[in-house]
Length: 71
Image 1 (cartoon, rainbow, N blue to C red):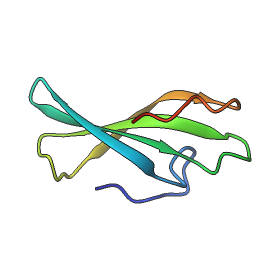
Image 2 (cartoon, rainbow, N blue to C red):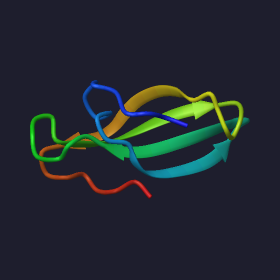
Image 3 (cartoon, one colour):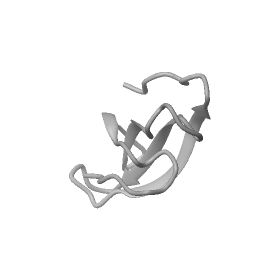
C-alpha cells in the first residue's frame, strides 16, 4: 500500500493501521530509522479505496523521544 522513500519519516514503513471515516480509508504508519535525526514519526495517508492508491497526507506526531506506535 505504501513503500519506503528517502523522505523524513518514510525510510521505514511499519505498524500499519487502517480506519474508515467519512468515505475515506486512513492508513496510519510509523516510520524512520529511530536513531538519527529526524528520528521517528507517525504519518497518515488516505484513499477512497481500501487497497489504494493511498496519498501520503502528513506527519501527525514526531520527535526525538519516540512518540509511540500508532497501532
